[in-house]
Each structure stands twice: as structure tokens, then as C-alpha cells.
Amino acid sequence: MKDSGLFEKLISILKERVAAEEKISDKSTYSKITEQFMRIALRYNSRISDVEGSFEICIKVLIGRLQCLFDTLKRISAQQVDSKKEDEQKKEIQDILSRGTKMILLLLLHSLPSKRDIYLADDVKIQEYIAPLLHINCPQELNCPQRIRIEQTPELIKFHSYVLIYLSRLSIGNKYILPYLNDNHNAVDHLSSLLNHFANQNQKNFQQEELTDKTQQIPVISSVLDLLSRFVIENHEIESTYSNLLPICLDLSKFNRSIHESTYDIDESYIRYYSLWILNCFWANGDFTLKEQLVQQRRYLVTLTQGIGLAGGSLEKSDVVVKISLKNIGSVFMHLRIVQGTNVTLLREVEEQMREMGYGEELEAVSFQKKPENLLNDWNLYT
Image (cartoon, rainbow, N blue to C red; front, side, top):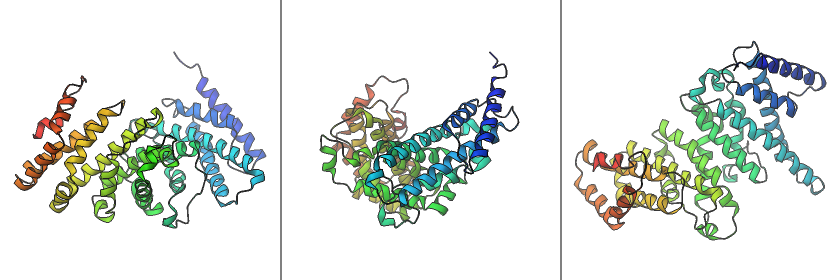
């Protein structure tokens, strides 16, 4: 069914509202209704280029919102807490984060390679308006001059998580994004510091009935690992430059809360998934010394086996951790038997670790899962 000029009318109204609001305000921000019109217009993915000026007017409103978001957060970050205006300030932050989250979700819909007809990064370098948000509550030990200090709330955690996911997705197929983030915002330093800060928390925090602040950080940490994995894929030197990442990822690959709130189950599984993904990159690109360290000192196969056990016992709604664990085990055997020739010493160590952890039982349990795809493909190729 044709829209009978509905899209053209929508763009016409949007242009009129933008022009009217610009006359009464010298700021490049627009009303909630105008932003809503913009979001609706961008969702017409196949029509956005049909009407002259439609893309430009949408981007104008979008950038206005992002600039307002960043300016507001920076202003609040620099302010002293005023008890008399505390409620008013919290309401302002909640509103700005709610509107910002909607914008980031909209960008996520239109920034993937499959949506290249309006691939925003190529047209307006939208990441330059998002990248400064990497500095939200970055660790104080970095002494970062761009730090944005905002009280941690569920709204902020959700927004921060989506920002990181967006930057990660934006980097797919775009070689400009990751160098920009690292050169201008020290992204890897910030991401690794956030991971280190999280991993160093006393594990007793995760045994308490009441969710702690660190437990609430799980969605952000999952997104941190997501974005960091993109850097690791592109830069094989990260492991040697950031030596703390190896033990952190080994630790987080086994991250498991004793009390499972359904709100965090999926994010928890992705903490383990991306940790294992990064470890696989380290293994694949590392030299023999690193592989020897992983097997003999870090007991890498024990870690991978535990990944399968944890995935099977936490009521996760996906098999991502099982799959990546099996993939990593297959990669270990491929390198030890094929790529580097038969390495008897490390092979013997690997087999001993597998027997020690009862991997045969874990593998048998996985084989009974009735799934449309064969989870054992990666394993069967190399064993």
C-alpha cells in the first residue's frame, strides 16, 4: 500500500517546525514533538532519499539533540550539588537521558552495514558527536580532563551501554571509527580501565541478596567488552600493550552471579562471551610464548571448560557461551596439531586439563541439546 504522500507531508511539517523553533531560540535544540517527527521520518528507511532535503533536516535535528545532550551532561558534571535543586536536577538528567537513549537506539537501527543507504557515519561522521560520551564516569585514576561525572542511575547505565554498543556496531566495515576513538579519546585506555575496575571488585559483592552498584554495571561492562573486542580484532598488539587484559578476560570469562536476576542474565552471558572472544583473538594472534603461558600457567582449557559448565547451569536463553567455548577449544587443537605442527608437550598438558575438569561429561551434556545447528562442529573439526 502506498503512503499517498504521507512521507512528503511529514517532511514538510518537520521543516516548518524546525524553521519556527529556530526563530524563537538561538540554540540548535528542538522540541520533543519535532524530535518525534524526525525519528518517524528516519524510520522510513526506503523513502528518506526520495524527498529533497529530508535527510539533511533529520540530521539537523538529530545533531541538535546530541549536542544538547553532551552540553547538558558536561554542565551538570561541572556543577556543585545543590540540595535545594537536587530533585530538579535529577528530573533534568532523567529527561535528557531518556531522549538521548531514543536517539542512540535510532542510530543503531540505521548504522549497520545492512542499512548503508543512510549509513550515518559516512555522511555526517556522527561518531564525533557520540565519542565524547565515552568519558561518562571514566575511572578517576586516568585523570581524564574530559571526564563527565554523573550520578549512576539505571537510566544512565542503560544510556551508557547503548552508546558503547552503537560505537561498536558503527566500527563494522568502517576503518575510520576505531582509530578516531583511540587517537582522540584514548578509547582502549578507558575501556581496559573500566574492565580492570570491575574485575578488581571483591567477589563477595556478587553474593549479596541486594544488587550492588557493581552488579548494576553489568550491562555497561558487557558493552565495554563488545567495543573492546573490535579493537582487539583490528590491532594484534593490544595484548602486549595492555598486559592486564589477559588475566581480566580469563577472570571475566568465568563471571557468574550466584543469584540470577533475569534482568542481567543475557548481559552476564555476553560478558563471558566477549571475554572468550578476546581470548580467542589473543590465542590466534599470539606467539608460542603466549600460547605456552595460556596453557601451562593460565590453564586456558580449564577456563574454556568452565565456560560450558556455567552456560549450561544459568538458564541462559542462548548458546553463545557454549559455542564460543567450543570454538576456542577447536582453535587450540588446530594450532597445536596443524598450524604449529604436533606440539606433544602442550597437547599432553591440554588433554590432562580436559580430563581433570571432566570435559567428556560436559561435551556429552552439550551433545544432548536438541538444536537446529550442530554445536559440536568446531570441536569435531580438530579433535
